Length: 107
Length: 120
Image (cartoon, rainbow over all chains, first blue to last red; front, side, top):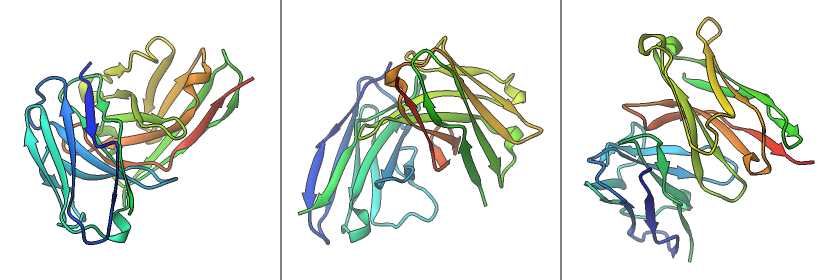
C-alpha cells in the first residue's frame, strides 16, 4: 500500500497568514492526489483534486501543487473558517490511502 | 442536489454483525461507484472499500483490515449502497461515511456518517 505522510501534524496560525501543508507519498502517484478539509463533527469536504484543480465552490485562497511524490496545499490568506484539519488522499492505486492529517488552529 | 444518507449504525458486541445503508439521491446512482470511509474518534480517515457500477461488473475492493469480514453491495433500484460488517472487532468502532467519487476516486460528496460502536 502507498503510505502518505503529512507535515506538520499541527500548526498554529493567525488570520491573514499564509499556510503551507506538505504531503509526501511513498511512491510516485502522478497527480492522483486530493485535499480535504474537516471540521469537528462534520464530514470531510473536498478542496482540491488532481493535485491542483480547485473543486467547484472552494475559495481561490486554496491552492495545490506537486506531482510524483511531493505535494503542497497552500492557504494564501487564512480566514477564521479555515481553522480545521486537512487531509490528503492518494487515488493512484488501491488501497486508497489518506495522510494522517494536519490540524490548523488559532495562534 | 446530491445527498448521501447513512443509517444502520449502533452498538454491537465483538464478533457480531451490522449492516449499514447509504441512500443516495440527486445523481445517477446506477452509473456511479460508491465507497465507504471510516474514522475512529479523534483519528484520521481510513478507506474501507468500494463497489463499482453494473457497467463495471459491480467490482468490489476492500482495505486489508476488513477484507473477508466486510461486504459492500448495492441495489440500484433503491439507489442504496450497503456495508455488511461481520466478525466485528473493537477496532472497527468508528463513524462510517459513504462517499461518491468525483473526477476519479477523489470524493466530492460525503454522507453525514453513522456511528458504529463495537463493545461488550
